Image (cartoon, rainbow, N blue to C red; front, side):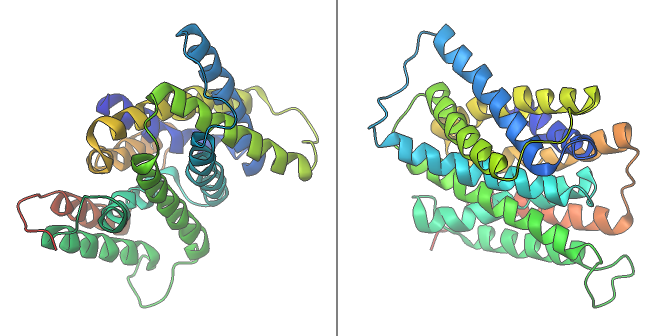
Length: 285
């Protein structure tokens, strides 16, 4: 399951980089959420499962998760990737586990330790390096605003991980279905306020949206909630070690992206930080 999660998450950044060339960020997110919601509803019915009554309080939890964990970060990532390469995007989103360990200290029973704090500091240094220009001078890279958008998306993912851990007990498939229904409905409403697309996207754009809907939206949602339910937020953090690496590989092979020395150094520092943050021998505060 961890290997599958790395593949579907890692390839998503590459697909988004392709998709935003043919479809506006908001409608790309809308398409992938609607496709994902339809597929997961079919799967839930096939499994003979039932969604809770609309008055069930779990709908509030999963609406929040759909909004914070899908609609907002999907839109932010799609907007940022109009300029930022998929590999760099994945590296920056890869800081999510470091944000998660901080949030988990305050909102779950997974408390901070010396190693987690050191890991967070390493990760922060890595982020700072990504915001510096290639000559490491003390100024911001010209793409700093797009990179900041991606960091905010990573924070949304971290918040969603904590919400998922605290949410009422729900089967992973049912929870993923609720989350996608809420996310697709909210995103479609916002997209319609901006008006219908002026033309039908080209075939490659449609295929990209479909791939995102099937893989990193519907399938990944089930995997995410199941893994969090079985093991907790920290396991998602460990899985995220490999997502940026997979995305960089996809970006280099498919999109001919270049991994610069600055990005490589930042990636190594962030990876070290994530590794240190998961060492469990230190005494918690």
